Amino acid sequence: MALPFYRQIHYGGKMEVEKILEKYGFAASSSCSGFEWYTKRIKFRQKDAFITITDVGGTSLPESLDKPVLVDIIDLNSGDQLEASRRFESLKSYLDTLSPE
Image 1: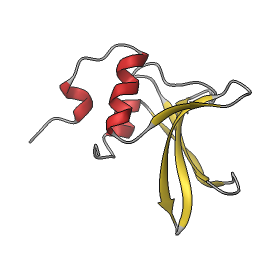
Image 2: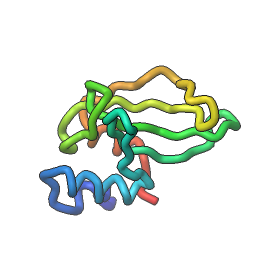
Image 3: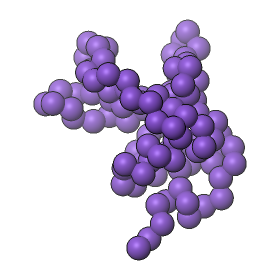
Image 4: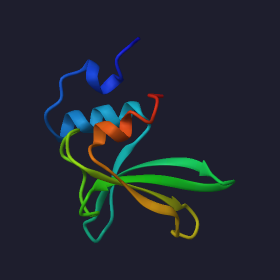
């Protein structure tokens, strides 16, 4: 069985995390108020939506694969949260639920 993509490369900092998340279809993004997250557009319950991944504080990018993260699904048109935030013990544990694109 092949190792997940993030285990096939060396990681240690934000740039490595960003490259890994790009393989899963995520891109780094920020707001004019200084919030940062990784986002990916999806269809969720027949709605255009996007997934956000942040650190557990909810305002910054995760800095390593070993840190806890929050994952949200947001309606693209209204900005409403479509599902309760999910906390993962690490970014790695969240990526284990996905397949690289």
